Image (cartoon, rainbow, N blue to C red):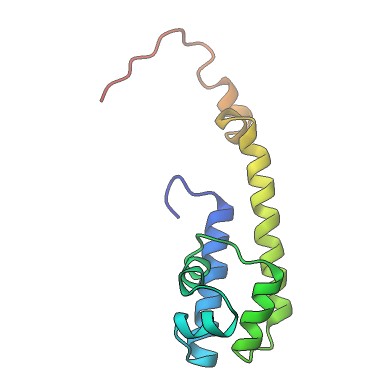
Length: 119
């Protein structure tokens, strides 16, 4: 996780890694072949696997069916958890970075009136 990533982004990448393993190990498919099977562009397969996009329920079901995998319920539960984590993280960020740091962040610089910024 890089310093700017949210826990939701990390979870999205972990879900993508699981989907990639499923495609490679269970079915031995390329991203292009899987894309053709589930009727999506192969670049979208890559984006799902790298965590850039979050697939919906229908895509996960199609992915599992194309890979002859039975872990659909587990992957769907993970998908819903990742989606919930994103919503929670986004709700916290809307208030600004001050809200993310907790109570200590709100008072850490209260006594200062001037700041020196250097490059």
